[in-house]
Length: 194
Ligand code: GTP
Ligand code: MN
Ligand code: MN
Ligand code: MN
Ligand code: MN
Ligand code: MN
Image (cartoon, rainbow, N blue to C red; front, side, top):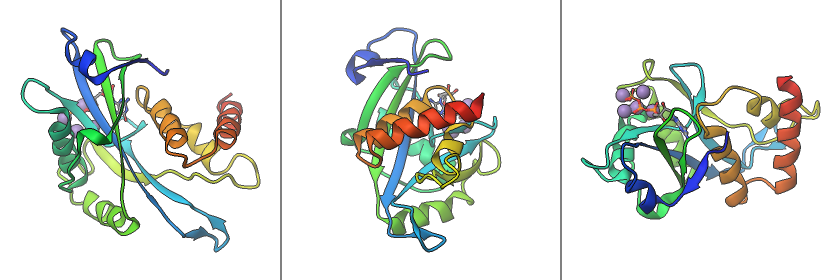
């Protein structure tokens, strides 16, 4: 479920399409799990009301607001923080595989570890907390010795639309995980899902 990539400009000229904007907030960290397994990066996703994992964000009406200000509004609703999103934070746009007639715009934004912690604290005070959003989650990027625990197990869960592809592409593009580590985790996740 990767969807068809399209430029932001071209997608905005499509007739009859809806637009959704989501963002991956992330930070570097020195923290170690059990005092020994490096966490390396904090990456935020959310557990949605429908039980699927996805990124914070939502539907934006380009006739009424820019994609970035619409995304900021959604972040306020879903995480209780006023975060500015800039056009430079745009990463990719896709004609989504489902539902029909939807373009999904994806953004990434690097933050400081302490700022991510503030976002996590504010999230429980957000208007949509416990309603559209069941909670923010961090993505475990390490792989435990069992081979399944950590990132492979995370990837074996169910994701909304093409958010799983967005996660994998962003981790690769930003160099947060190596191609080899991503490939191994995806293979392992496919085995868990069977
Ligand atoms: P309402 O306020 O209830 O309309 O929800 P919303 O505006 O927050 O919309 P939502 O975040 O559910 O996103 C709208 C649509 O985009 C969803 O129905 C999904 O098809 C898709 N979607 C949701 N989350 C993601 C995501 O993280 N990535 C991608 N690619 N698509 C998503
Ligand atoms: Mn909305
Ligand atoms: Mn949403
Ligand atoms: Mn929303
Ligand atoms: Mn919705
Ligand atoms: Mn809403």
